Image 1 (tube, rainbow, N blue to C red):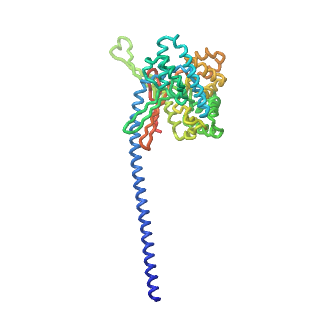
Image 2 (tube, rainbow, N blue to C red; image 1 turned 180 degrees about the vertical axis):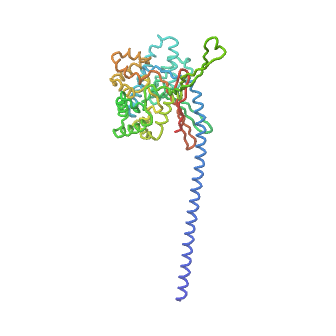
Image 3 (cartoon, helix red, strand yellow; image 1 turned 90 degrees about the vertical axis):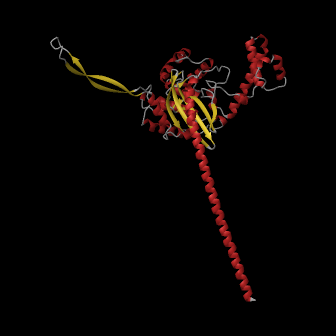
Amino acid sequence: MKKTKTKFNTTTAKTGLALVVVLVILVVLASIVYSLSAKIATAEHRKQYFIDYQNAQYAANSAIKYALVNLKNIKPTLIDRTESPDFSDLFTLDKFEYQEMLDEWAIAQTEKLMLELEEFDNSSEEEQNDLLDQFSSLLGLSDNAINLSKEEILLYLEDDIPLIDPNDLQIPGPYGQPWPQIAESVEFEINNAKITIQYEDENAKMPLIWAITTDKKINRQAQAALETFAEWMQMDAEQIEGLALQLDDIAEIKQFTINPKDIVRTTRVPVKTPVTRGRRTSRRTRTTTRTKTIKTTVRSAIGHTTDFAKLLHSPMIDTDALSIPLPNTGKRHETPVKYLALWGSQKVNINTAPRHILEAAFTFGGDAEEIADQIITLRQEKPIKDIKDLETRLYGYNDSIQKTGSFITTTSKYFSIKVTAAAGRAKTVIVATVVKEGNNFKRIAIITQ
């Protein structure tokens, strides 16, 4: 009996050991299979991402070429905004205040249309057709608004159909599109990559190069302008100091000067000229050597702008920190970088800049808050034609305006073109900047972000 029991125990032990070995082998095999599957999946993911990135890159390069060619068809024209909220202070509003502004605007627009409908019979045929067209569009009726009558419109209104949905409203910027865009965004596809092209007014933003100067005459005001802007954007003292230190590092490489000139090289070249004396020497001449000064443009003034564009987009500036959104601004995503001109523009367009940028600009002359407030009111009545027009309309602030004259303009000439290409999980962004000279656009820089 003892031998049989011992043999049974030995057999059981061997069987158990065999099961353990099998389980270990199965676990090892499962781990190997899982590891191989994970590696294969990772490799496939990387391969697909590489394909997506190549498609996005190709699409972005093609789109930026199209955007630059299409630029000649875009003519930035300021629109009439007398009956709409001004874009100047949107950056200070949280999402609830912004929605309240839209609600109030929708009510005001509805009341205006109803008053016009009451005066319908006294209006001209053109005004009547235009009014019926507006009602037709708002009520979602036929596009052929002329076939609708006033009575038909009133029948729809009896059903208490809301005329204007605040969520459909968009507070227009100076050019009609959301600030700082100068034209409607363009969207299309190239090889399954979704393309978005945006054209922006760089003169509507705060020139960061103002703070990159060693000119003692404007250095203090330039620092004050930067602080004014930063405080409006709710940046704390540590953030402001950090940005100032980054700009100091850039200033060691290149400084900002007002109205930079072409870089010209002057060389003296010897010139030999024949000299003839009298009749006896008419057949024989002597030569004298003199020098002639030749000036050659080594680099045009636009080259300075290109330098600043590259420096401000280098790792020397922490744009990630400047991209942190202001609290409670919702989908508008208000950030300091949205309002900064990082492409070398030197002047602020007083017709298109928001309040805090106007105040920063007029720090150079004084009375910044008062002048900014007056400009916002004036330009809603009609755009400011030129600096002389501003002096005429704000004659009480001429001294401040003249001191600020080198830093402001009434016509934008610096524009950026942002192309975003998305394919799968890959995304590529290319930004090109141009300067408008007459009817022509001259490219400054192209940077892939």
